[in-house]
Length: 401
Ligand SMILES: Cc1cc2nc3c(=O)[nH]c(=O)nc-3n(C[C@H](O)[C@H](O)[C@H](O)COP(=O)(O)OP(=O)(O)OC[C@H]3O[C@@H](n4cnc5c(N)ncnc54)[C@H](O)[C@@H]3O)c2cc1C
Image (cartoon, rainbow, N blue to C red; front, side, top):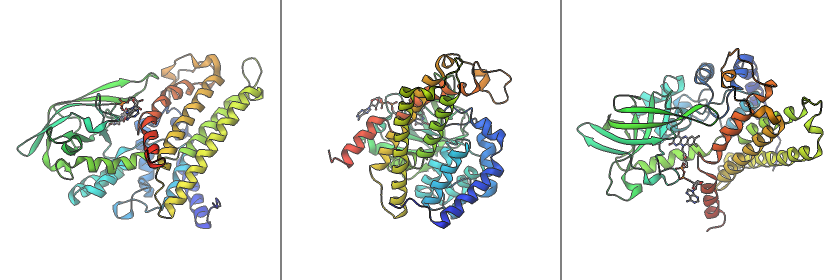
């Protein structure tokens, strides 16, 4: 495999770097550093999206006809890698990455015209109502019920782990419309475009790190127009599977991991209170080096996938492989960061993590986000398809089991 970039890719990378130099201010970067997981502070995401929208770059994977930049696979990879390397706000934006592409594939022309521009501009923020208590990996067992009543559906049930429901004004949701059919055949995909509304209650779930990212959403006779179905009634499983392909691909695992391991090296290179540097301890140095090899392996796998996609090939099980290794390696790096800061991992100074806060962290500044990141990354091996589910996919696709 030839890893050298083509001249046009180098030119594009330089254009991206120039844009990031100009638009990604020190303030934005400092604010973004306070993100423990994949979801930056909402104000920050809105500010960053506005800047991207002005340049026509808010939806890197969208085709031109829907307002995207029309970038090819390699350009999208360069974009996300450069953003990660520069410390741009992480923007898990389910409108851009999930429901937008789904509407392009399965929505009506009216639905596309209504929703896509508002996703691009940041007027609408979407959340994903799939999982329920007892229905995560086994999503087809979901129970949230929608019963037709005149021009509406009446929805009753609950959705769990709904990322960003508290800042969203729209939800895309899987509901059971035919309880008598086989599990996959009685599900519909519906857009809840008044969110929250009467009959919809959002309860926060505060994570171990003290962050509010996920929620439980309760539906109690909530009414949603039947015209908001995407695809036909009871055909939601097909729409959902289409959407999941977007959820499982597209992240710049390599660049994000390279960032994290560089952060680990910076911590280990800093003098501790006893005047020693952890990087000089051969045992710890070895742990860093071993993890660095893992990061390099993820980077190369990603290059291989990019090369296959650019040639119109399907990477198959490699998408699961990279999700799995990316998540494991990410967790490993955050564990080593905790080891590296020692007792400074213990203080929990939530206020110091608010942007513009005058509360000082306990210990060196680099220690502030180490424990929150460690705790937050425990979820990376669960969401977007757990490790065990990825193993099952690989067993089937690679080993034919
Ligand atoms: C931080 C976070 C954010 C999330 N955001 C959203 C969101 O925005 N919207 C949304 O709809 N959902 C969201 N989820 C839910 C997520 O998709 C589910 O948690 C995930 O699919 C796992 O489902 P579960 O929690 O029901 O666990 P289960 O499916 O019950 O799994 C429990 C354990 O059993 C294992 N297991 C399950 N099935 C198998 C199998 N067939 N073979 C082997 N092992 C198996 C799993 O790997 C896991 O270890 C989020 C979850 C987290 C943690």
